[in-house]
Length: 365
Image 1 (cartoon, rainbow, N blue to C red):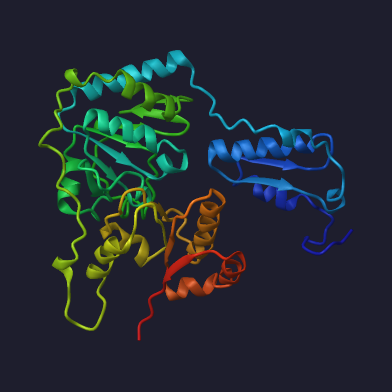
Image 2: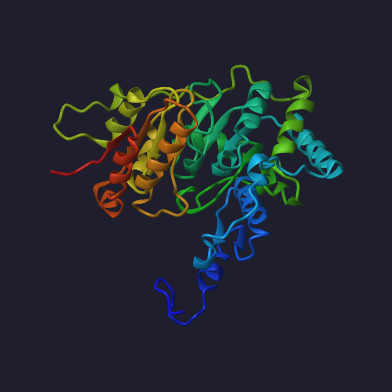
């Protein structure tokens, strides 16, 4: 049939085929006996791999009956374990370098948040007393009230003290790195691969050696468990980075204009613990680097894709998720007037759902 929302050529699989290029799991819901398994599998893959999935639901299948027994069973969302022997080998290699490092640092990026290893990172930082930095996309991944927190590292976009400590380190433990152009300020990292250990959701890399299939969660947990702080050359006391503060008074301006240098540190004083902060592509994504978050604040941004208008819908989704989780957390959105116009219709959804979202939308008079 030449149905609407098609190409008019009778090929109903064309959008399914397109989606396969970005989805980690795609399924055609065409056989009622298989549909419950297909849906549960897609949800599991979406959660475990933190990537989109795509379900094709043909019009003539909408009212078909399927077996409902699976609704009584919780979906297994546990991550597949690493091969123990391979995992132990990687842990031993990491510990050898970590015990010998004279100036190690931890650099936390977006995929540490996306793949839910923030607690594992925090445990390692606390046990080893390591300085910890975040990338722009990793903003909010660590407790910024901690004495170990040193700020945002973004290559040449970093504060001099931050870039000096990270780039002079003889061991950078990089967790969940996503080295895109904006996230690295135009690929301006000045770190050596010879001093880098990278932990990822699908593999780990030590210097130039890659260990495919060894996921970071199990490795991070075992590194923390087996770390012998007495064997470490690094002694954290007195060597942690300068404490990060919101430099409001340093940037106060008596003029009538609100300057960027003042605004973002001042926002740090406005935010509360456990707020959700959503920043739009552009000024907000870069300005928020100068905001020190209170404990438990979640930062949400999309520097990789950089699609303006994304943040309005993201704020709606974050606020709805917080409410569904039974949380009283505030959602605070920073979006420019141009980006706001692209998805302003989401305001109607926020109002309909009764979501409590604070929006900062700057206009130049």
